[in-house]
Length: 371
Image (cartoon, rainbow, N blue to C red; front, side, top):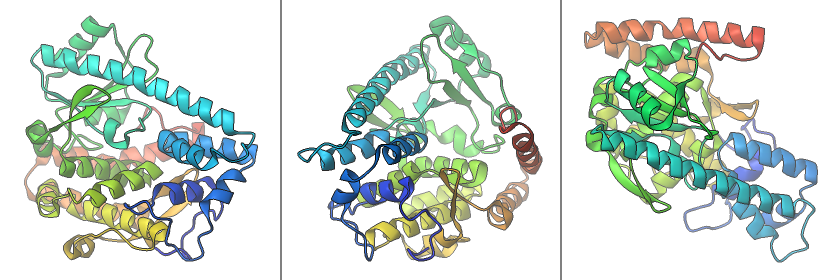
């Protein structure tokens, strides 16, 4: 992917926020050729443009990071008409996140008090931003999870889709909590095919401190694999937060690529992981002028690169045919090669789910009930 070949809107919200958030680790200005100064662009946003930007930031989970940088640029200058709205929106989002964190900590504590291992996955990857739901993983039994959530939080179970049943996950709705709590029980992957990696996930967990709370979260390699499963094997789109989050991890130098490849190979998704990282690297290169420092064996394993990604309906899209289909085929062959009959049977249902989801979306405008 290069700046001239990228299919992104030249002056849209994606481009604007990408330039703000994908600075070099040292905080230098973007290095892409001909990139205009960010300050005039920020101060020159019309109200309609800002409204579009804010909506895009919400859907891509970069509200806090985006607004903080925009407000930093605008402070001390003649305030545009959207300045107060930006401050109010940032304050509201931080209040929402603070409330959600408090409840997330309560849920995790309830599991631990009953002797169940529990960890937060995906939700805290975007910090200081926070997604639209809370994702947890536990190896507790499903009936234990349901009982705990009902007794401790008066939670009710949201209607489950076909994909939810296969993936062995439940969404719980808590009184006075806008965000659903999505709990993955003993399995990972769109069809719950990832059992071995899921079983050892808590053993590799690490602890992080977030706003005075301590949470157990996925190890760096597991975090990247879970993100890959979500983006490359399920949704087939990549949010801006995924680009920013993974670039930040790579910049820290904390990714053990050898360990990541070993774990991903055992899960049958190494090519997907390598492709995902290569796409992120190519996207970062557009706005920094240089790619991420990925080892050659990662790039060599990638099935395709950033030039295949396109922008549509608010997200960066991964083409399903033939690109994602090829990754699915490799995972399916890996599972069958290991003699995992049940997991192979689960994976074999994925194309049917995908077809049903596309049909449902055409008819009703939503794939709810399928994915």
